[in-house]
Amino acid sequence: LPAGLWRLHGIRPANHPQRRLALGARWAARTELPRLLQNWCGAQIPISRWTKTLYEILSVDEDEFWSWHWTFKSTRFKTPQPLLGPTRLTDLAINVVLPWLWARAEGGDEQIRARVKQRYFEWYPAEDNSVLRHARERLLGTSSPALFTTASAQQGLIQILRDFCDHSNSVCECCKLPELVCEFGVA
Image (cartoon, rainbow, N blue to C red):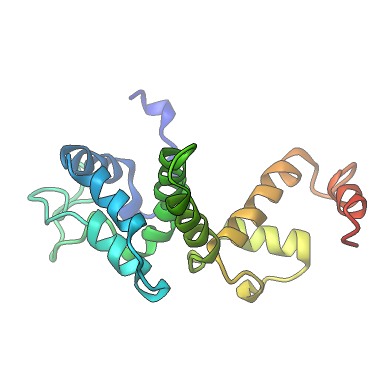
């Protein structure tokens, strides 16, 4: 890909696109992965084991190169690093796996859809980040992450930020959100 397409400023080395592409390639080579994910969704698993069981499905064996390097040009690590860390699992579950499973069940298996919906709305919150902090401070006047106890609530907050704050100036002039909140009788 052209160098201009990469936005590398501020990313953690473990999240470098070269490592993410390597992980994606490993998943693409696993022909049983869609079936494993479908089975995971269909299984009755206690909420306390959702993360662990999904991580077991998505984790890959140590890679000769990528377990030891951040990029093609980086120096070798002293100890191997996994291509998928547990902290990225919530992001993958909420943004990729569960929406994909929902789409597969569309117009079909209502039991699977119910499980996907339950897992989406009850999934543990993701790691706190600058986008969430900014949204809480700007929209709620607090930096405390305690208000958002699920990943779906965090996603909702981010969506509000994207829909309203990203299209407004820094003093919220002409923001439509307060008007919409009043229309729904929330205020």
